[in-house]
Length: 158
Image (cartoon, rainbow, N blue to C red; front, side):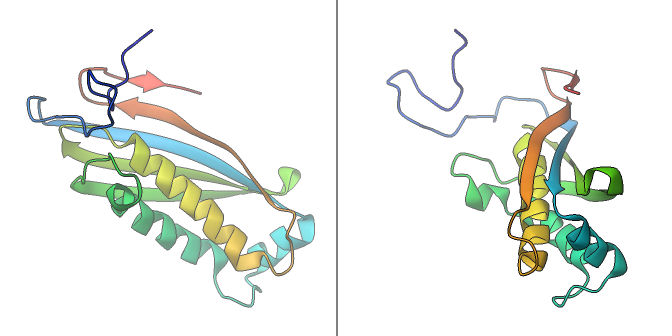
């Protein structure tokens, strides 16, 4: 069984020391879906949600979340994020919004957690914005689909 990075030899949680790692360009992509009733999706498409521009606010929330990941997840390193992009694709046939969060940095550790956090918070913000009309929404399929940079190289998980 592979050794878990966030535990020392005594089994105690600790922050991984990345000081000896090379500074490289890194990217991670994470995806999520939020499935809802067709009427709810129409509200989003038409821009008629009482709280405002659902997708615009959700995109902003995802960007903010990526930047705050190390404040939310105890053993994540604070990273100099160089770019966050949140793509939102409406899928009428699935009654869903498909979320793709892409995060980039130049540093000594990857940005998978930042991408996952961005995708999650984007979905949660969509939920929050329209929950008054649809409490049956489901946030699903949260996953990393690409990790590139560092010693592990490129990993595509789709």
